[in-house]
Image 1 (tube, rainbow, N blue to C red):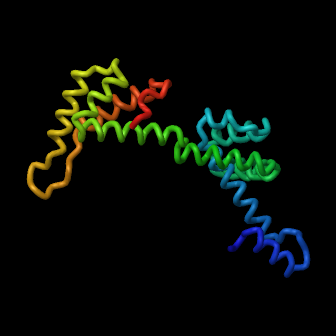
Image 2: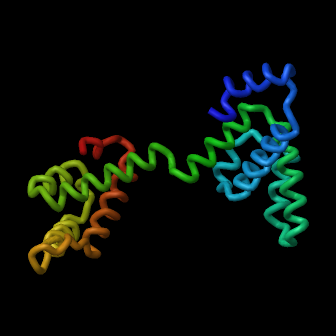
Image 3: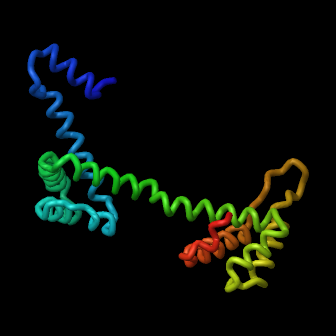
Length: 192
């Protein structure tokens, strides 16, 4: 594939040198500048986990402050230059942090899926309510029972052939379940 290790080796063999061409350098420069632009959007908590040089951190903060188009463009070029000086491990950390921000962490995704599964079980299965109350006794049982009843009522289509409709009760059950699952650090709700 274009740009793979094998491709780069083959090109170097054909050229007779291992030095990067101007095109390769330009491509790398552009990639680092784009990564630097993405770094501007990184949440502060994720930014703090990275081992970035102080000069780069200051340059990113300055770029966020600049509003002038030309000034911002020049600052981004400077950030790209600083990015090219970083070790590959640091660049990989940046990419992972950006990926986590974009896709969420695996732990957050798991928590959301567990909450969805519990909500769906509570609505579909009569026994699920007892199981939920056994695991999370501090739940307001009257409120949850009323929401389940309303969600079941909302889920029935008014006319045959219509799609299922999920109303406010459906979303409220999810919020209650999610709140209790996130508060349960002992793993009591993991039997979904």
